[in-house]
Image 1: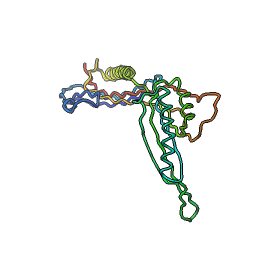
Image 2: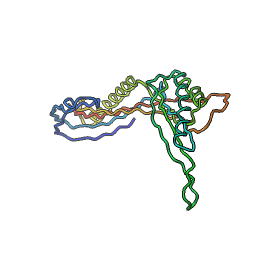
Image 3: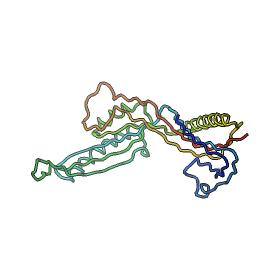
Image 4: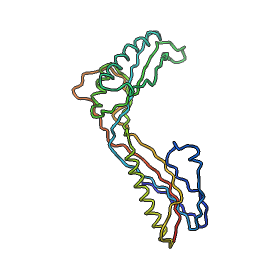
Length: 248
């Protein structure tokens, strides 16, 4: 929890604006009501983060192949990637959760001192982004993809598919902390209460990256134990900026 405080002495005219969502219409964002305030102003910025267990993971996977010509590299890549995608679908990943993120062909050269680079062939790669909703079986899924021919892998990135309840809890906690602190300052300054003049909000969701994964470039190997995956927790962060007026 992070808090920022500033005090502005009397008399002040503020535009009372409630900013909750970037999806508000332009007319709604432009609407403002001037509010006369006679008492000193307290400005607080209260940050709250709530940790919770993730229910979704995102990984990228694909195939990289090399051949003497670009056409041969792409042809071999297409054959191997087709097998990987068929395996992905057989594991229960829906079409809407599979998205191609990159298809590349690059020439590769051998560089030796001051000599002219020598072309050694062409590398083709095809990568897809996957949204995995059955994270309990993520390790076995990764093993199956490598077994099907995938030799590129990045992730996983753990998230919450629906964090509305978590955001509401963080928002409530931030508002309660803000009022408690504002009341402390009001009493110290000889005032009895506070009233809200303006509120704005910023929300960010954080994802947890497993340290066990980087990019792999390997063919399938026989494994007695599936790849271990620990989802941990992910944090949902809400920052509420609140302006209070001290009142008698």
